[in-house]
Length: 71
Image (cartoon, rainbow, N blue to C red):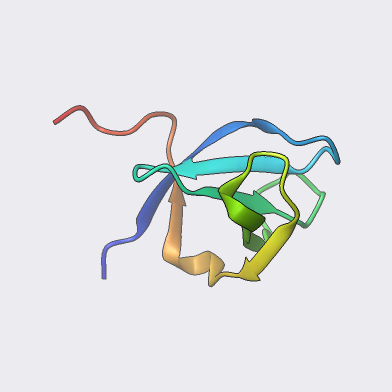
């Protein structure tokens, strides 16, 4: 199964790293260790950059990339 690519787009007002999918969905790492080793990813409420963490996601379904492939 191909992983969903996400890229870092900054940090929200709680210093949580925010990622974005190719489709524009914001995802946040609620584990504040910043190592990407033990991430706990969640969607953002109303898909707002500074929105509250919402639905928990299966972290192993995602792959962090520097930038999305140009196709």
